Image 1 (tube, helix red, strand yellow):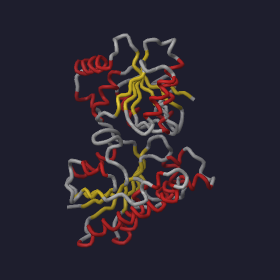
Image 2: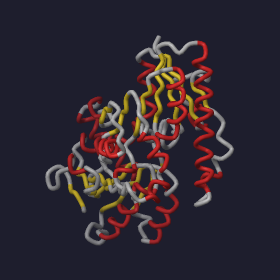
Image 3: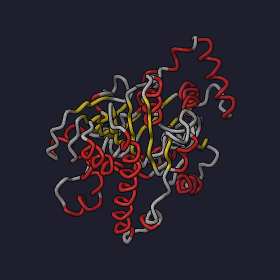
Image 4: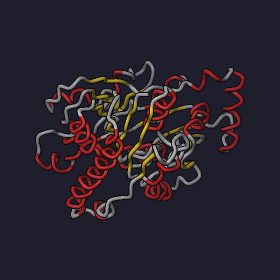
Length: 350
């Protein structure tokens, strides 16, 4: 039986069990379904709840003693370095124990930059294939040369510069292929968009209309009301506040418009405070995180889908909204314009 060992410092679900982007969890799950002997080495406590693997295969390590200190502003960068190398040493040590008896038919798979150094060390020691996987990159939209940027994003530079037997880079509009080229990484690369579960294919038109009406009623929308929707983790670079400001600017002209924000994250309290300061409490609905499959019903209910990220907007939520024929309003950043053509299948804002 072929074996694959994942190393990652990511949570399998970006907003808690079963909630948020499914790319990581479905990657692991597909290997399981195809009959691989799958091991996951991580330091994320929430990953222990993954229902498809037992504790002997889902190895959740203790957080590094530097983890909390690495979150401190400015001074935390020193501890970030210590945290990175400590946990990668633990990843390598744990993977080494699995490989000590036999390394036959094994692939080492580093999912994102944070767990890559440990995976690289193990792959080299045991002469195993190394696969690295990136969900796009921040480096596509920041200047490469200034030293300060290299210091701030050193983990990304380190990870994306690492040669591998195969790199899988997500084509999410953040120019990941160009970043690899700029950094001189000539490893074999697959530049792919994430797959989509086209859930609408499982429903008849009548079922979809019933789902739409049920969701709108649950949210308190009348048939004539205009539903604006965003779906994302609530973190700074997703720029969800732009949707709130946009609603404020058109509030008088569109008195029947309301905004539904699906997702959760560190920026939620700040976004709720902004909503209150703009006197929009009655026109903005925060749902919190919802199971990924449930986001389909919100998209079915919506009239306009908003995606106003800083870096790139060609992620799964936008692609899923497109498959449902939603009106798209998004920003002309990254290579969003390759998917959205202004005035044809959406509106591109500068």
